Length: 123
Image (tube, rainbow, N blue to C red):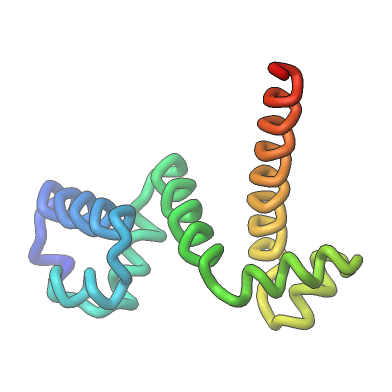
């Protein structure tokens, strides 16, 4: 199927897949909509995106993961003093995934702390 598509058609297909993914559709749902395997959808998202688009894709993945038990477990394990590599080993996931979730958690925690400081100065 890939060789049958022109460059413009492949770009349109990527744009469609990219938008569906950022709008919360799963790889499997997109595969049904587009008519290709979910693995091919993943490959297209990974291999055809620009660095900016790939960052957006990673953010979407991290946002989805933040709503899982695994994120809560990562944060709990980090909060009791485990290193990122120890948490990755315990949960059998990549260290980079632990670091991304940790960074997001710390950023959100810092943001809420800043809001508290601003509110207390207004009083």
